[in-house]
Every structure is written in C-alpha cells, then in structure tokens.
Image (cartoon, rainbow, N blue to C red; front, side, top):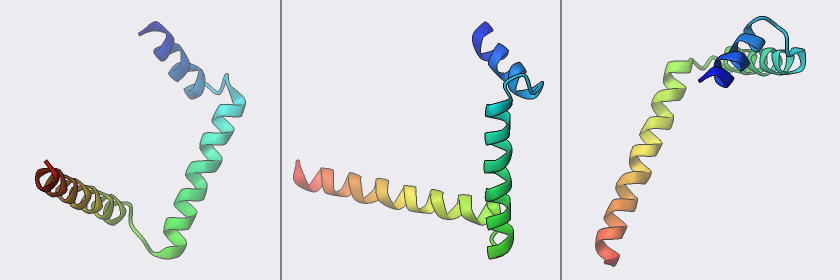
Length: 67
C-alpha cells in the first residue's frame, strides 16, 4: 500500500517527470484523436463493452458445443 501511494504521489507532484510527460502526451493525443473524429468516450466504451459481451457469448456457446 505504501509503495503504490508513493508512486501516485510522485506522479501527481511531478517528481517523476518522464512518467508525467508520457501520461500528459498520451492523454492529450487520445483526446485530440477523439475530438477530431467526433467520437465520444462514452460511445467508445459502449462499443468496447458490446464487443466484449459478444465475444464472451460466442466463447460460451462454442465451449458448450465442443464439450
């Protein structure tokens, strides 16, 4: 618990500059891509969850047919 809270504190207080810059660049890039494509984060999460449910459904059906 102490290690993870120390890492989070280091990131929030910009003590670990390389990690902070990478997080900032990655989040800005993702935001810019979503903004340019006109795609919202909620619809992206919904599509990912729908794909996950479909995969799990087909996996369960194929497991029941093959066993």
